Length: 282
Image (cartoon, rainbow, N blue to C red):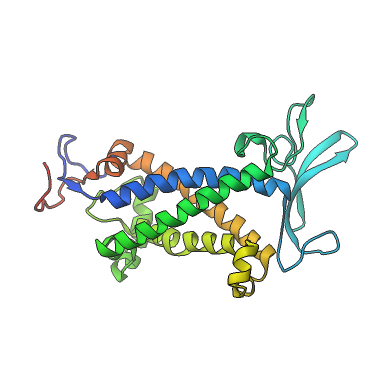
């Protein structure tokens, strides 16, 4: 998985890449998203349907996702319906557990907080970590704007856009360039997360709050109603989980020790041939 023909002993300089604000907010987000995801699935289990529009219920035909269990000649089965297409998801979604002790919930208890049905506790956990998540966003945006992290490492420039095809080719060959700043794909993905997905999941979460509706009723119109906001919230959560999985795979492929060191100590080992600068370590 070497990215060049240099001897294994050749090393680039050790640079201070991640500020204390980036590191603390990174790990805080990781904790928050873990609890938000699992408590969010607990909340979803209370009504495992997603709709587009203002209304929901049996008299409306606007469901885009439904997870549940049905009785069949072979016994109860778990089913998931997406845009009218139904799939048997027994053992995973809709129905889990053992044949002797089946559990009829959309998502199994292994991926919910609490692991048993408890909507009240799920909401308390979700709201608590939701506000911690928002506070962390505020700290990150303020600190990253002041120290130039957003301008330097997050917002893509023209050269980054032009470099996307080459960066994709390098990633496909598992050739990773450890430079002073993020690569084109990193910038684009982080920009999408910080400036699209994070604000969107917060805004749709607030739109579902009756208290927020009384303060900012225009948010319901912005997202096409509470039910549409709930659907967007779920989709964004799915995209964030996908990003997390890809992120972990890239960390492992690019060198987990170097990547973890940068997010714990701030120091990052660059590729051989990277020009040294003031403040670097050998």
